[in-house]
Length: 169
Ligand code: FES
Image (cartoon, rainbow, N blue to C red):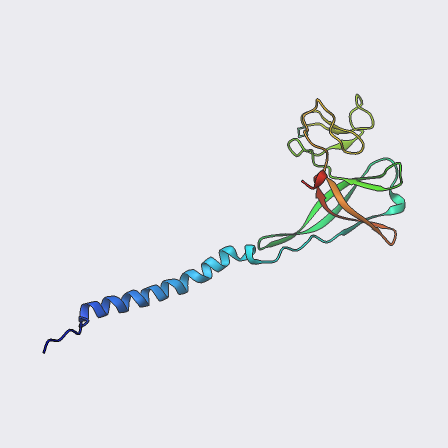
């Protein structure tokens, strides 16, 4: 009568046991680190709230710069960030709120700041120009119009949200 049963040697038993315990401990240490690293990706994206900026009766047909703060969440870091918008009423009486960030390399644009180009937004960094509605003037460095803030008028106040490129791009 032959014995076909395979026997596990003491050395193999120790190898299996140590490998199993080591793997278990490594997984226990790595899981929290992996979870910590990818946690921001697992969080649901929250839409930025609209922020009250100015009373509508202070908005004129001439673009004015209004400063406000937005609450920003960047991964684990939450902060209130100061920003601003160029705001005016167009010929139809609609409120327009343009981002002051130049679409060339991100300098701040200003309204009516260049005597050679009245009634235009001017970027002093590389002589960028935009029309009153934010359209970039051909032949100047910016290749796209100024971003437009999401806006809403409620109870006599202007609320602004995110500045978005035109055409939803
Ligand atoms: S950053 Fe505005 S023109 Fe270059």
